[in-house]
Each structure stands twice: as C-alpha cells, then as structure tokens.
Length: 233
Image (spheres, rainbow, N blue to C red):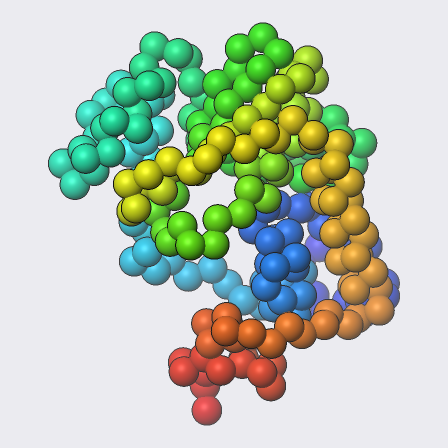
C-alpha cells in the first residue's frame, strides 16, 4: 500500500513503528509536525551539512571502535573517546527491533513496534553500557534516547539487570553523566502511552499544534504557526 494514498485517518490501519526521533517529535516538539513527518510522510528528509557531518562522525567511530581503523585527521582529537573500547568486542551502529509484546524481533516482522540503531554497546553478563556519539549542542541533554536504547537492548538480551549509558558530546569535548537506564519497564510504559496517544490522534484526524521557537525551522508549510523564513509565499 502506498504511503501517498489518501486514506481517511479513521480507516487507516497501517502499522506505525516507533523510533526515538518520532517519539521525541511528538513528546517534545509538536504532534502537528509529527503527523506530517512520520504519519503522512509529507515532509521528506533532506540532508544538511550538519547531518552529513554527524553521519560521517558516526561512520568514523564505527570503523575505529569496530574495526580498529584510525579516525580521520579532522577527528583525531576524539581518539581518547575510542581507546577505552579497544579489545572489548563492542557492538557499533547496531539495529535492534522490538515487537508489540516487548520482545526482540527481526526487521521485517509484521508486529514490529519499535526500532532503533544504537551507536555503541558493551554487554557483559547481566550488565550493559550504551554510548551515544553526539556532534550537536549539549545544552538540552535528555536521557530519553538512551532510555529507549536500553529497552531495545534489554529485549535482545533479556538477562540484563543493570544498564547504564551516556552521551559523548564531541563538539563540547566532554562525556555526560552516566545514567542508570535499568528501569526499562517504566520506559516501555512511556513508549506505549505515547504510541497510544499517536494512534488516537490518527483515529480522529487531529494532531494538536504546539507553538514554540522550533516553529522557525519547521517544514510543515500548511501550518499557520510556521515561522520558517524559507516558507513558500
């Protein structure tokens, strides 16, 4: 079924697969934008210089930590953040998938409910560490993404009892505090609650707006609150 087919919202039964970026948009930014970006998919992804740089950095650390290849010259000041994982069989840039029952599944499972790619993972018996490379601004640090990653990881490794994680803010040359992410049940409940709300929005065909500073960067051009200077006249 085409994503572009104009199905009345009340009759749309297509599966919605959660991800951190989608949940973050609905939870912290604006459900009206989330509708266009993740439900109707009328806002297409456009790679910017910043996103390209971020992707290049992630690839470089994947090759450095996972394959012992040197970081590019422009990134070698961050070698100190890779060294601690040498020889520890860390997983890098790994996709995880979870079904509606909170169990690990494969990419093409019909009941897939949540998915995500985790930058760096160390698993040792019943303990795990999650690392997340960041190239942006650390001003608004929020462990929600790490917590979702912990849910993905715990589904894959059910014997995990203690999961911690942190962001590595490369631009600011610092690592964040270490967050305890072990309460994956609470995070799973929050994910399910958010998804229930999203499905309800779709059923009634109304996704509420949230006016704020980020309206100046939004690409939902039909929104009356959109203040993006690139908005078509």
